[in-house]
Length: 148
Image (cartoon, rainbow, N blue to C red; front, top):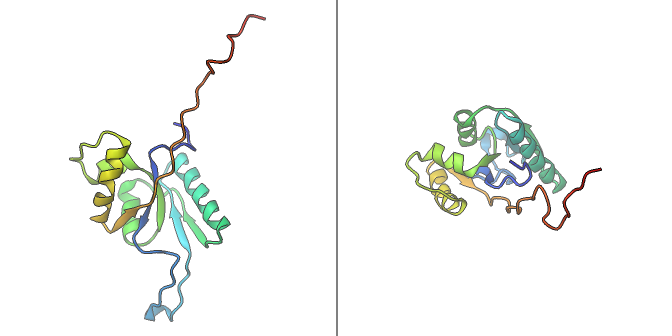
């Protein structure tokens, strides 16, 4: 799979806006305003999480990271309890984790069903990245190689 295409990847986040300051009496009216980005426990998830972290930092958002959290059984509850705010995720796999009875078979039907499945847990799906067209391994315009 082409890492940057991440065709079925999304950024999953808790419903609260982590960049808004909250006045919590227990915190004397101060909030960090930092966004905590997590990753699953595999390299591609970590790389995509760091890409999002750097993009947010470039937009002057305070970011912290929590990488290699583990599987969905570990990071979905971390989103729910606010330990992390965002995580890159595969839409299809997440939908089938949340709704084993889903019959979605393509990106459009998955993206139609997933928001409701997430909402049941107090989570939301942010806009998935645009899909890039596949990069051909060879160009039909290129003449065939001849022996040297």
